[in-house]
Amino acid sequence: MKVLTLQIKRHFLEQILSGEKTDEFRDILPKNEKKYCKIVLHEDDNTYEVTEVVKYDAIRFFNGYKTDRPEVLIEIKNAFVDFEVDEEGVIEWEMEDGTIYPICCMVYQLGKVLERKNI
Image 1 (cartoon, one colour):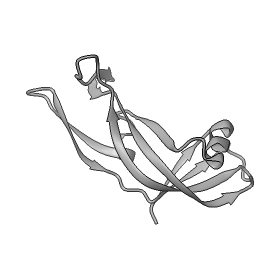
Image 2: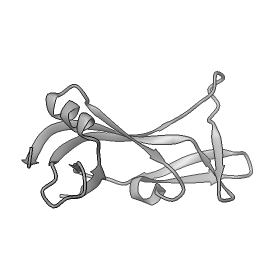
Image 3: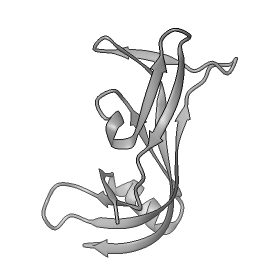
Image 4: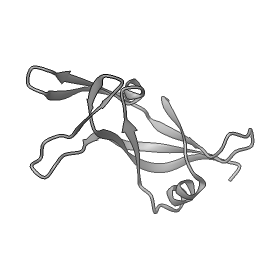
């Protein structure tokens, strides 16, 4: 099983466990893109292509950094990239350290709780 490990605030962890929060969102930036997906920018016409979404079976959420911190393992039902667009449907872009990239995030649709520790 391939597991993505993420930190999460206690409030959101409790929402996941109660079933209130069913999606997890993570911003995709040039520094973390490889963790989530591969986006190719075609500079000649400023279009993009998501060539790969990294496949994970579950997310292990940690709350805090102590050894006895709360943690849960949650099934991932689906994952996709969501791009921010303007009123005309055109993707919005930003620049970071000389790299232009589309404003987007990974969306993980969460499934059942597989494990709980220190909750």
